[in-house]
Length: 91
Image 1 (cartoon, helix red, strand yellow):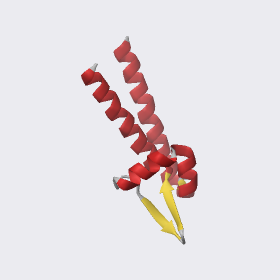
Image 2 (cartoon, helix red, strand yellow; image 1 turned 90 degrees about the vertical axis):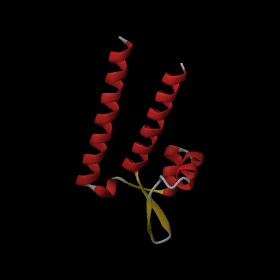
Image 3 (spheres, rainbow, N blue to C red; image 1 turned 120 degrees about the horizontal axis):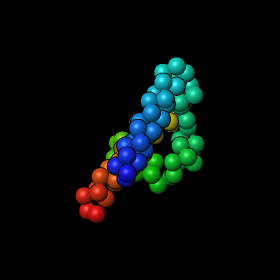
């Protein structure tokens, strides 16, 4: 039963990311968030770490850094998946 629950959780996470990608393609301005908003939503420490590793991509509009909410969600999901795999190997 645990494997069925894991599969369902993975499918739900994938469908959420796909829905985000569709929203981004149809109305990209809703996907864009400022750096201060990204820090509020994802955490200051996490954003700084992703920028340091070159994983958090952004573009500049004037003096503001603009992030893609979808890209940040994908990064967070990949990080959680990696942690889950490592936990499964050690546990």
